[in-house]
Amino acid sequence: MAIHNVLVRATPEQVWAVLTDGWAYEKWVVGTKEIRSVDEGWPTPGTSIHYSFGAGPLTLDDETTVRIAEPARRLELEIRAGKLGTARLSIQILPWGDDAVLVLDEHPLSGAGAEWHNLVVDSMLRFRNRRMLKALASLVESRHPR
Image (cartoon, rainbow, N blue to C red; front, side, top):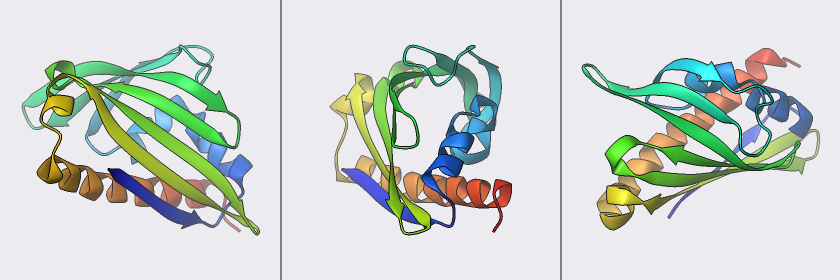
């Protein structure tokens, strides 16, 4: 289970403003190489970000689709990763005084990622998700300095 949290020196509304910028996705989602397009209305449930991900010559094109969006509170995404399958990524935004706490929870849903989910895979997700949360917090704080 890959659950992490981070304190962000910004309001929940400022965090949400960054999450609603689909073009900013590649700046905080580890492994994303390029955003090809963002559906109009992002992050309305059912809209998607179309991107390329991978490392070096191993690049795949896929998409992430919004499943649940509660402004300034919660964003739930279904991430597609080719033959690796799909994963659920939940970002919860909690008010914390003048700041916000982000809670990120990611779990494989289908495909090889779900079938091979074990402690080793979970360790890799934990490492990736820690980096992802730090990058998201940094992006939010740089866009909304105090």
